[in-house]
Image (cartoon, rainbow, N blue to C red; front, side, top):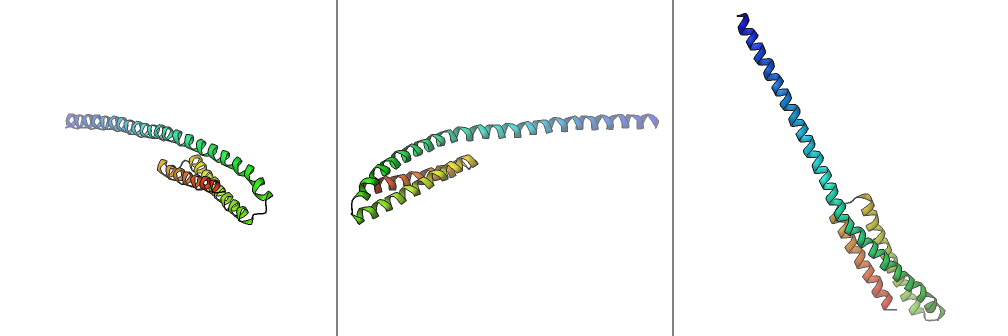
Length: 140
């Protein structure tokens, strides 16, 4: 009877030890998988946001060019006495401000780490606003 209890104790303790080692190994594998997936998603989002930063730089450059055109035209329009042209200029300048607001919105989305699709939507809106502002300037 003593020997059977001793053999039962040995086999039970061996089984518990093996299960403990397996649980530790599985925990390490799961943690490594989660870490790998987090790192790979960060790399992927970093790559996609690189092109978005390029588009933001392009939008800012286009805005700066258009703003300088507006500033040079302002003196000519307000030097005359044509109230209609002045009103058109003010409306066009308002469109320019809306474009600047949309560009700032893109920049804040990139800085806050919004999703790529959200940033792409904001870039699309900013491009539309820049097109409207450019058309408004060309109508002057």
